[in-house]
Image (cartoon, rainbow, N blue to C red; front, side, top):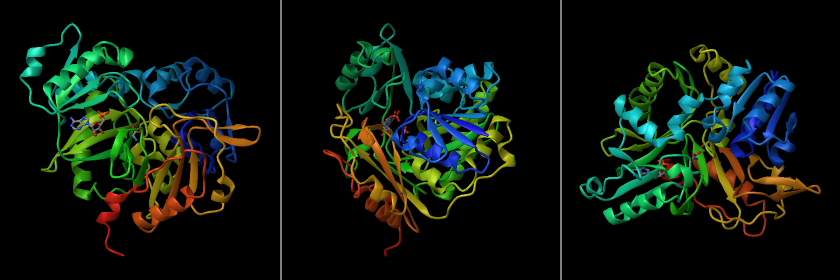
Length: 428
Ligand code: AMP
Ligand code: GLY
């Protein structure tokens, strides 16, 4: 079969690599891909942007693609799955209606409330409906969120009512463009964060191996928020008991609720959760896609054929398949360009990739491109070095051995990815 992967980040390199390893797959196309997918055996980049829905439909139809897997949220929220379905093309991801779980935090909050799924108490405003008296009646800290897609940047944790007021006004004034037209203001939830990713087929869900990412740029979970500076799997924060609670209190009611509301959910579903001190999982946000960088360590551990899982999900038959996992831990360290997450420097030559290719583990590319035979940096998150090991600690050592092999001017990466999991492991 022929598979098309849509996107050009580390998650998409990992998806393309995993699909290419399947004995069922003859060819993998990636639109638009990166230098890593360009160099992968059995994989070919196609110069169509991930947001170009009409171009993607055209590509899948003309190349006789059997299965398309969408990486990023933007095409999903724009309705790429509906456009493929209208042409009878198989595309793994949620419909435009279901993707509103990520595309509109206002929609997600209203959905959660209506289906009694635990989440922070909140109110949604537009500039016209904003109620300063309501805000004054709340207790700080408060969390102010632009409702639309803001590339992970549209959330402000406000320590005072005045700060929350200012943050909401800035959003109404256009700080995040259209994404801030509606603003969600919610209570601050204490606890430990966890993420939980499943595949869904409209009715059923298949939990993927547990994982945890590090969203802050600097060691010790400090510094600015990013798309993710590293991730590992399994994540000991998700104990078997918590896993059971998340499935029955969050995932299953979400899949059931969407089906009942006439928008059954097919695709990866990513729940960002806060685990309250009493152990209750509460939803912070939904993503309608696989996580990046969570996908890289998770797919390193997946022993099942991802194309079979996606095809089973597309015909509502997820319970007929299961997922097998490598019992080893996997840990990925993101190597970012200087300036990330603000203004990043691009076009630097990356050294050491050949040496790294001879080491155990795998380097997935994100913001890279090839020019005159050289691999150059081409984005904020540039590479993700993934190691495997008998423990998270061993996977961490393998990942850093890989990361330390590559260089470019200004490369930055955290030295402590996985520290919480390593602390929980028995002493060596
Ligand atoms: P979100 O995009 O909604 O997941 O928010 C980004 C980050 O802000 C989350 O990963 C949390 O660290 C933090 N956050 C969001 N909402 C809350 C909340 N209600 N209470 C505490 N922290 C939050
Ligand atoms: N790593 C977080 C995300 O993919 O949104």
